[in-house]
Length: 312
Image 1: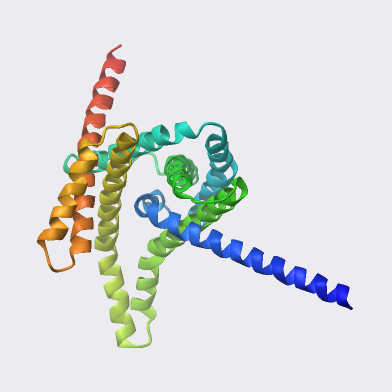
Image 2 (image 1 turned 30 degrees about the vertical axis):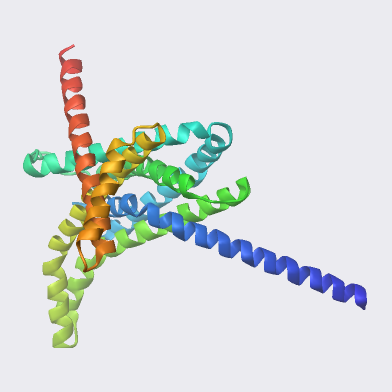
């Protein structure tokens, strides 16, 4: 009997230890997820464009295909690579983070450039759209874009994890990958179907209030999607700029980082209402301005390089 009680006591102790580790993994994943919020917002803002112009019945299947591709990118390709780099070549993480940050800055600057210099889309009336081929192209393009954003998410996550073992790091990273993918593509599914839900409410709603809400959703979704896209662009520049500045600090170039911190501290000291928020907003704004400058420089370099390549 005493042996059975001892066994049960050991099982209880192991259960408590496992529960504590699971709590630690969940807490780490939540903490890391906050640091990837900027990329997550942009990923959510970018994806709905891939279902634009396709039949409504195919919207959710397309989102599901992209989500599966995103999970494959994160869990099968990027997770093992990230863990190997962290164990055998941790010195590569800051440069890789900076490269990812530069990409975010470039993407943000390109979006702002196209906002003021839109490119017309040619329409060929003689050749109807092949929706199946277009869907295949859109899904492939979305998964490629997701790979780059997922690489940035995984690298940021890995640099933020405070785990006691490689296995703990892997579990936290896997949990972040699954959670972020579910959050992004769950949000995308809601966004792409919101206008359909609003239209159904406006047409078939039993109460007048329901029909009014439906009409409001249909009218408001275009502006809401534009707002989400703008937030995503701003988040790209803010996150990209901060990653590059922090990367420069790790290599000893601290001037820009000190300037940002000093300005943020001055704002906190100068105001009496919400000093923490205004200090953070100042910091984010300066990171975003720096990211925009880096993005435009990269946009210019790539544009000139492509012209020279075409001429050559």
